[in-house]
Length: 542
Image (tube, rainbow, N blue to C red):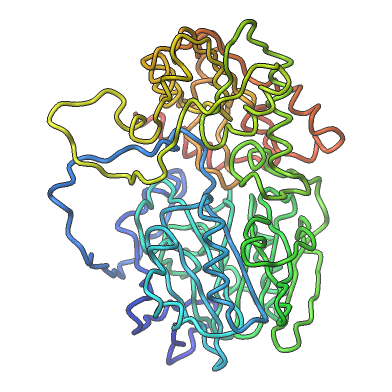
């Protein structure tokens, strides 16, 4: 993105328009409904519009609810590379490995030899956004940061909210990519707007940019420290300037962020949300970015500096990374994900056996390793009784006569030869609202199963997550409204059991206190005061 022709005033950000058609324009959202009602926000009258390049297809009359819509969703994944001439290309490849962390938007910002930051962002999968090779050719330079995201309430399908964000302020250009969620976003935004800041997006990430622009400290790393001292919640951040890359992790270490090094001759440095991204671009894992740490890599001499962001706090890493979010071939928080899931399933078999069951099947794909553990410990044969289609999009032609549970049937196909006449143990990673689970139970019974026994490789989810995971309000969580028997009756299975919270903590051993399990226990390390205010307002309006 080309630099602005005039420097912004102190404390102000400029989001310059790039003549390159591949670059997304940042615009003001049509509304600020995502902001908390109890806070008084000053609305500015500046207005930009974004024109759509395509019109709705009249033949597409319905949308398939994503099978994963009844799962917690990690809102993003980040990657940063510095010190390699193919930085943007490697960044795009690494984003493919992180696609499971966000499928609604992707983007890359690079720093070229002319000290200019260039941006390409778009809606859709990484392969869709960067389908045109010219986009990657445009992103020249030896450093780049990338991002994949899921949308949050109020910002679905908004190009303006696709990261990395790129802005100019009085000291130059700065790009940011963020994985997490700020629990004090609304109050910070209100304060910044009252002081004259103008926001271009409805994303909490933009608050960080404004805090940096308003800081009176020098150099940039001190401005980043100032900003991070103001924000609360979960954040793994990457910042890119014309010649430096910064990686930052919040003091609690809620979200993962790892450091690696390319094996190719450049020996470039890589940061990523998961080690699976390092594997794909042939980089060696070196270590995690520690909670509360800032790592600065200077592209001019590839020197690496580390700074403690603020006094250390007890680590509270998100346990759901090991239950559902991360790929099983990743090392997250120093633990192998596949090993964690296998042990969750094995312990579940010990806690909640199903006597005389004929077969154990997973709900693909996230239930696979837990089901393997369950089958191995119980001695019941493991089979893939449900086959997942990876080729079904989110839209379909609505048939003249409705087909029951079509959304699930398009995604999952039962293998009748495995299920018919059998007592089936179905292992899944979690139950959120229960809507998808009930359809899966019905699907298996329709295929001729004699009994369906659901086994869930995590405790009941009773609270929302406010640290970078898109979960429903607590009122919508089925385990917050019902006991286990109530949930069993609601989803229609013959028996239901969850992995107990005590067993989960026991499996984590001495590290158990260093994991956040607020969605199971209700014990929030950072009180989500503003989020709860929004929730109460929403409940009152219903």
